[in-house]
Image (cartoon, rainbow, N blue to C red; front, side, top):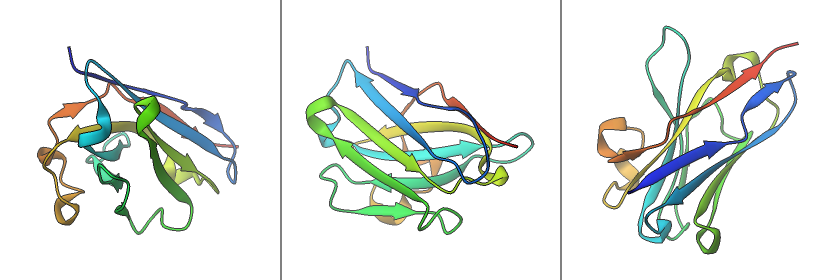
Length: 126
């Protein structure tokens, strides 16, 4: 069974950092591109970041550029999202998604991804 599991969420003060992990089971991630998405209450799901299967291409939403960094360790079958300088507006449920065929030009379109994790809550508040 193909499964993605996110972890690393929590409550952090503004300006703080968190590192989210997206671990795969039942399949190897090394041929999949990965997207991170988030959804805040009352808002649509939005693309946060993307990394190609090789790690050679990364993308970021304008709202997180310079603060978030996506990376992958294919040996550990895991993708990471390092989030620094967190703001209250980063509060959301964060999801990772995988697909073999999504290309970088469509990275932020949720419908392009076949596999999704269950999400991890990130709350930024003082």
